[in-house]
Amino acid sequence: MREPVELRRQRILSVVESRGAVKVSVLAAELDVSVVTVRRDVEELARAGRLRRGHGVARPPAGEAQPPAAVPALRGDGSAGDGGAIALVVPDRHSYLYETLHGARTVLEESGMRIALHIAHQSADTERPLVERALADGARGLLIAPRWRNARSEELDYGWLADVGVPTVLMERRPRPGSALHVLDSVCSDHWYGTYLAVEHLVSLGHRRIVLAARDDSPTARTIRAAFAEIAAARAEVEDWSVVLSSPEAVPGPGPESPAAGAVTAAGADAPPVAAAGARTPLDLAALLRERGATAAVLHGDVDALMLVQRLAESGVEVPRDCSVVAYDDVVAALGSTPLTAVAPPKAEIGRAAAELLLHRLSGAAGSGGPVHRTELLPTLKVRGSAREWVPTTK
Image (cartoon, rainbow, N blue to C red; front, side):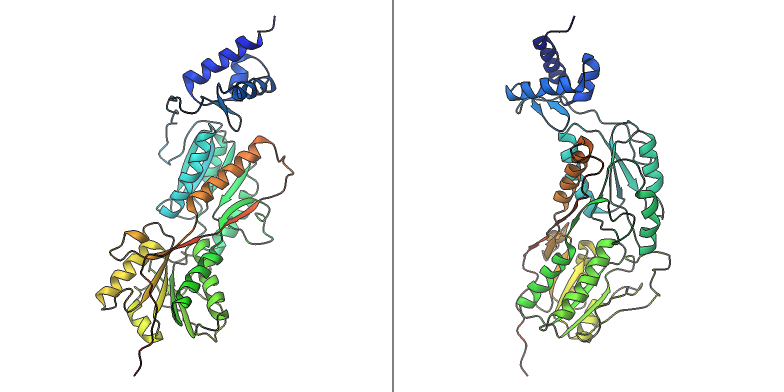
């Protein structure tokens, strides 16, 4: 004899009350009924305000205390051993992407999904073994931000990453057009626009000679370098611009894309908008500013920016009195002795949007043949006073 509907729904409420968020598929298995039946029950209970429903999950009503979610034990490589989780793969020592990770985590935990976090070390080819481990453990989906320190390492990942076999969303990565990953879902910041905001702000303040000191060891860094060269070369107001490496450690790493040691790129307004990597030796930004007659600098990323500002002060160059500065990343730019005006990519929002897109794929709403999503979110400019109007001195 079939169980009465009201009794079954009361059992659902009891399970949700005792455990917090519970997957519909788990409820169906425990009640020995179809997922469709439980989904219908959950919808009716949610309509009556007796519980809340999310992406395949039933949760207690808003305002009621929920039991803490079980945290899976982590292995030594930072991965979780439970099956059915969402695997998140991000590089180590990357505070920018950690903010993205926290945005994704919020969405996934609210949906009742378990999370298996995998931290990829700085050595080459570390992401693939972590992904393979996650898939062997039964991961249902993958959110990943590969390190891709140079173009060669990026291309080597295209083949296997395109064939992982579970819904996958790239975070803050935009593969080369026409590559195997061109048809993979991705959510990115529009770093061209972020670079435009930095240049536009400085030009609006009267600066005509601008230096970009940027990293060169990630897809974001390379996008910023190329964007700055393109934008500065196209602006008639910019009389001179140059691109150099912001830190001796910020290089692409060994491989065919690595720069020659000691090479510094400096391009004038009449030069082609191409910027190679800079020197492996510490950057004397004060000397470069004097050499180029530059009055402003865009510095990527935040830690390098704060260190370069300190180095400028040691050389007698005060920010913003002698040089206006715009940082790029806005992770810790506001914490310096001189709070830095900064371009702020929507880091947490990137993670949230990527997680929501992955949940959409897992729900089956789009189907395996649904359109690929390539989402771009625009950065903003946080003005804090490290850049001021430039008034040329008269002789």
